[in-house]
Amino acid sequence: MSRCPVLPRRSPAAPLITLAVFSSFLFLHPSTAARPWPHQTNNLTELQFGGSKKYEGSSEFVKLRYHMGPVLTANITVHVIWYGTWPKAQKRIIREFINSISATHAPSPSVSTWWKTVQLYTDQTGSNISRTVRLGEEKNDRLLSHGKSLTRLSVQSVIKAAVTAKTKPLPISPKSGIYLLLTADDVYVQDFCQNVCGFHYFTFPSIVGYTLPYAWIGNSGKLCPGMCAYPFAVPEYIPGLKPVKSPNGDAGIDGMISVIGHEIAELASNPLVNAWYAGQDPVAPVEIADLCEGIYGTGGGGSYTGQMLNDRDGATYNMHGIRRRFLVQWVWNHVVNYCTGPNAMD
Ligand SMILES: *[C@@H]1O[C@H](CO)[C@@H](O)[C@H](O)[C@H]1NC(C)=O
Ligand SMILES: *[C@@H]1O[C@H](CO)[C@@H](O)[C@H](O)[C@H]1NC(C)=O
Ligand SMILES: *[C@@H]1O[C@H](CO)[C@@H](O)[C@H](O)[C@H]1NC(C)=O
Image (cartoon, rainbow, N blue to C red):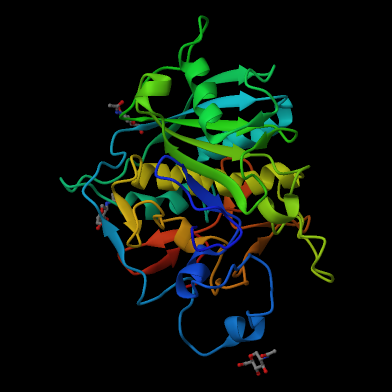
């Protein structure tokens, strides 16, 4: 992330951000601020049809390493904080995605098969990341306790308010709980839309009282869908690029689903930022979802999303949840050394 010229360098206290860019591409071409759409340095024809080499982020240069810290091996519980005004219909889509991660009865290719790549990561004792991910408690912060514009530090204060609330506080479970702060489409968070769509980190005992792995993900629907809800929206400044139809009829939320998947995968494999990541710099680690950002199917990489699926209504997706379809980026598979996902053609 620090490679992206648009972004200020993060301090050690700064959370791990999810860029609206191809980190895998960045990784190979450190000087390029690549985005998940065509740009001048990227030859789409070459990426799609160039040679027989498997792409999907595969690279001899990716050195993902285990740094001996914990991963989430116990049943994972996802606690959600809804910040701002959240229509029921939007909540339902997100809840179903989280509930689909461990669902055993979704049609193939499924969200639970997508999670199998994450389960490949182990800790020092050889224990795998948990197969079970369930939706935990939810807290509404409808009245915007910390305002309409959050900083990275005030994000932690919002979490503190949720876990210390007088009525129905969120449970405190540092070993198996992850906390998602989801902001409504009119809420701004520091760096949002400046190449950042979400981030994860852990809370500081000095602010929250506990060390809890958490992530923030924003609904970009109004602020910057072309950046954070791509390919369901496209940036205005690229003429001729057409958005694809989103599977649940809400580009902001459908775009958010992939970022939620990204952050949950990284929280599970690097909850305290001392477990699985690539790169020399622990301040700017490249994690298992960063390596596959923008890759949704076979052949993906560079500016090409890879082969996705289309439903009868023409909506684009790449995996099934319990009742809905979702488009979720792939994650890095350290066993085979490339990005994998449930809709792989081979
Ligand atoms: C893109 O790559 C293809 C295949 O290598 C090549 O034929 C074409 O000329 C390239 N286009 C540009 C604009 O470089
Ligand atoms: C646990 O991780 C190891 C090493 O990546 C892998 O071979 C094994 O299949 C994983 N087990 C499960 C249940 O995913
Ligand atoms: C973990 O979840 C599984 C269901 O997926 C359940 O059978 C098991 O009892 C749970 N373990 C704990 C310790 O809660």
